[in-house]
Length: 281
Image (cartoon, rainbow, N blue to C red; front, side, top):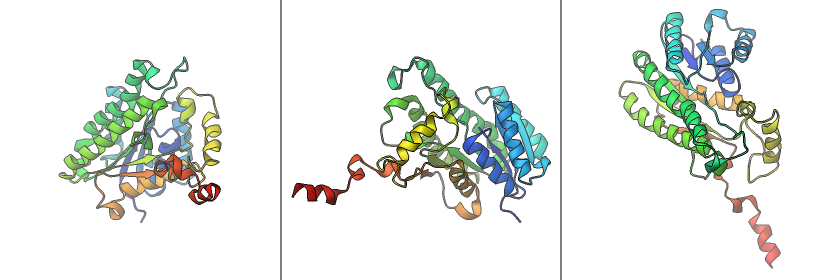
């Protein structure tokens, strides 16, 4: 028996990247999965990936939806209940960032970009969680939010709005975990660092931009101490761990950071202190 057999999972933002890898993993582990995203073609690619792995067709529900719209959220919940009968796992993975069309970053970006980022990265998570709450209480289910190390203690001057949304999401995770554990529902999150997901094109950057940055980061130990950029499977495995009550039942309201050590490194750590001392002698 596979670990998620009999479970039903909704994975938002599953048309690519972390969401696609997570939906595939859950389905391979026996869950019935609702995949959702705005891009019909990419969502169908995800469905085909899952089916080609040997998952039965009736274990996959594809719902094209824009989570910024309340009516699309209702459709996502209602179609999942109609098709599968219940919801055990909600993975709030959908997220976005924007590159200003005029090349502006941080505080210089128009506040309309702030509104769009907050709409997807935070408000949609809040409202979808509200809509799924009653169903998750019935199954004593699991919620896993996908945050980011951008929401941590370090400054993110170029990605200000994105970082703000993820900081708020972390607080949402902590606070809802206490409110919902009283009903048997666990809430946790994962904070990825640099991961190849295809978000660069979704942000409006030229194709391959993120890969170029990744090669630079991998060559600099002050950027990536472990020397490699993450892959979607790295994060999907953590999401599955947090959704598996047998393995993580005592973890409540926590965020697992998966960033190759990036958030632990200060500038001084990027250099060999003993070599510096030798040079001073």
